[in-house]
Length: 134
Image: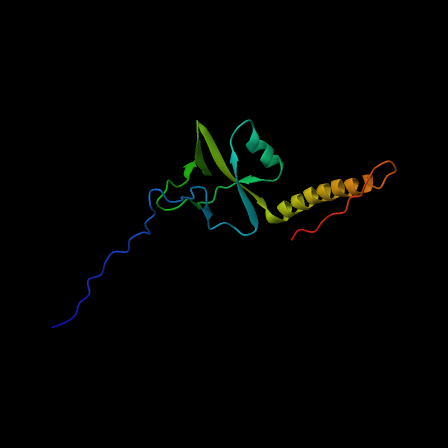
């Protein structure tokens, strides 16, 4: 007598109906880029293109397997947003993204420095000193 195990088909992971579903996740992203979904409304796509973003045309996997995946209109990666609107997947080089974030932080630092300097001027009561977060 021989012991023969019947092979069972591999089943996809079950996601409960009431479970969390991440329909906008993107797999296999290029680590040299920062990705974001942009609502295709009021020339927003063109404004993002002017800012250095490009429309993603790579065949990336969007959403979980058990959920509606992204659709392709032409070659763009898109997702239906509801109410007749569409999201378009765009990306910006990590180098430009980091430069943009540094510029934003400089503006915040300048604003905070101005708050600190203003309290030192004559006629103001008290003093400002930044507190460290725990």
